Amino acid sequence: MTGARWVLGIDTAGRVGSIALAASGSAVAWETIAPGEHSSSISCAGSRLLEGEDLGWRDLAAIAVSSGPGSFTGLRIGLAWAKGVCFGSRAKLVLVPAHEANAYRHRRDRDFIATVLQGERGEAQAALWSGGETMTRLWGPESVPERELAEKLRSAAGSHVPETGRGRAGAAAIAVAVAGPDMKPGLAASLKDAGIELLDAGAPPPTAAAVAELGDRKLLQREEEEDLARAAPAYGRAPNARKPSP
Image (tube, rainbow, N blue to C red; front, side, top):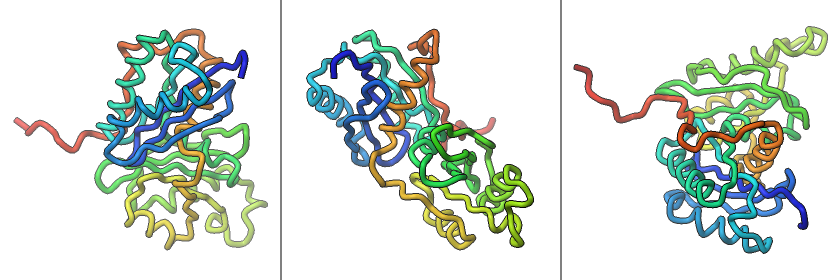
């Protein structure tokens, strides 16, 4: 594709990773990365995507990376790899929040999309977005106790729906669909029991395609690239392994 602006998107925030290539803002190819293979597979997968379009690393305008929240190890692997490639190829580095990428994947699916990611023990980190091409963050990200999540999402959505649009059932009638990759089975079950729809986390294209497309948008909006030395993941929670209290 002559004259295209090429952006490589990487998502290693969750158990299943992915990598995608976008041409001038539209994802054209992608691969998923199996659990446990983030570190060993990302370079080979990236090379295959570039070779498929007869490109080299220096043809990339930018590398967009899911910045989290997500897996501590996965986020570090993705960002460290991207920094290395950017340093060697002179591509710019762009960070894309995981909440935004997950909402963008499902922007055409529903009017209200909630993104739910792992938080501290007993809590989830959630955000609410309006659907459509002009996707907008309406609330969050905010840490919410898991037992209160369904009610909180409906309440957040309800504040953006006029009283005349709620019907007799009030807030309970407001439809909120949840995009929650790697959601714990117990939390997923509780949301289903509360009548909350769960969007298919495994539906193609994978999250990296959203990261690549959003990365292209952010690349055009930025006057400066991310600083390779200072760019860091947003883990969203404290690590499980902590120093003992004195």
